[in-house]
Length: 220
Image (cartoon, rainbow, N blue to C red; front, side):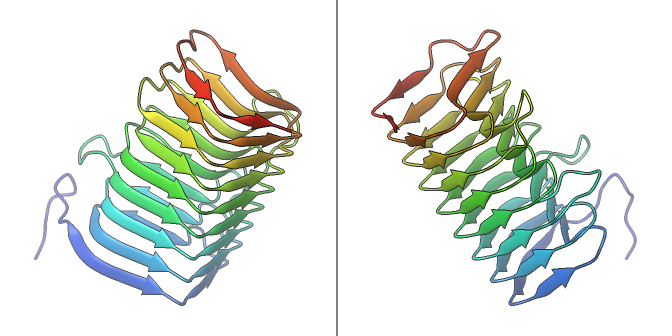
């Protein structure tokens, strides 16, 4: 059966587990998929992205090791929309080790919705542990540390152009090489109950980042 390129089918019920995926351009590319589970995989040394999620929904990424991905393109996990098909939504990333990826460990962009990032170790990514742009995300119970090479926008968590749609709580954000949390043009963001430990700068808000709710955080 053939279909137009602007109207691809939705592929459903995919299970990828206990795999070693390495030395490709992209480790796993999920395009217009629904109900996909990626679990207990080792995904490393792919020249573009470790996992690339485009216009997909109900994706669960669990217990994976995602390392040393990306050269020119952002490594780690990338979640974006497709202009003709739609957004990515209902994505869970949990219990993973995400490290040594180019630019960022996780990048969520382009109006992705209902993304949950929890119980991960996110460390030693070259610029940022997590980048969120124009999306709806909850980030909790992660250990986010040693990210960034010390450049101006490097951070454990970088939030850009978000409004009343980000919750960051109960994370340990530690020894990141510029900022623990960086907010750029982002407002009404909830940052509560986190431990900030020896980041170069624990938090930084810039360009119309105001009325952000931050309390019960510990700075050590």
